[in-house]
Image 1 (tube, rainbow, N blue to C red):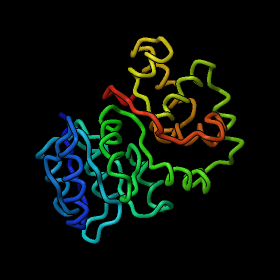
Image 2 (cartoon, rainbow, N blue to C red; image 1 turned 120 degrees about the horizontal axis):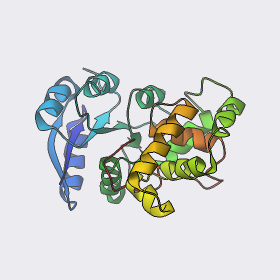
Image 3 (cartoon, rainbow, N blue to C red; image 1 turned 45 degrees about the vertical axis):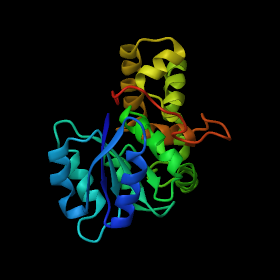
Length: 230
């Protein structure tokens, strides 16, 4: 059972997400909260996944995210936003968020995305990821420098990077290209080091900027099945 906490300042959003997810097999919303109570609720409930509003009037989502990241075993966090070009998204990704979702995400997609998060995959609403990539927010070096770092990767590491961008977990990547999960984990660590990024989401965005995903590649299109995020 995937345990989920939904944090949002609007009661209608909290109840809507709770209703949708509790109707899905293998998922249970164990609590909902406003921003001011979020950190305490998350510490108490030990969820696998947190859906966290990025803009709240009492305590903003970035503050809650930073608190979550100090936990011994922090849950996977996806930021919720109503804007597909929210300027806070880049800060959230740099602070450890595993992706972001628009609040108008189709109900039938929501459970799939939560399962992907719990499995250690990358999740981004396609419309939002395209907007983010067009603007290239968070890129503090020129694109040719990004591409140069990608060129440091071996052919196998490039293969793994593309599958990371598809949202696959280490176990699923290993199955796809016939490697053990431990070997994939080593490749992922090497990729993050060579690309000078701290997480899979940033690596996936850099892969897109370097043109590894092709014209139709959406970041986070796939789903993972293992919890290991490295």
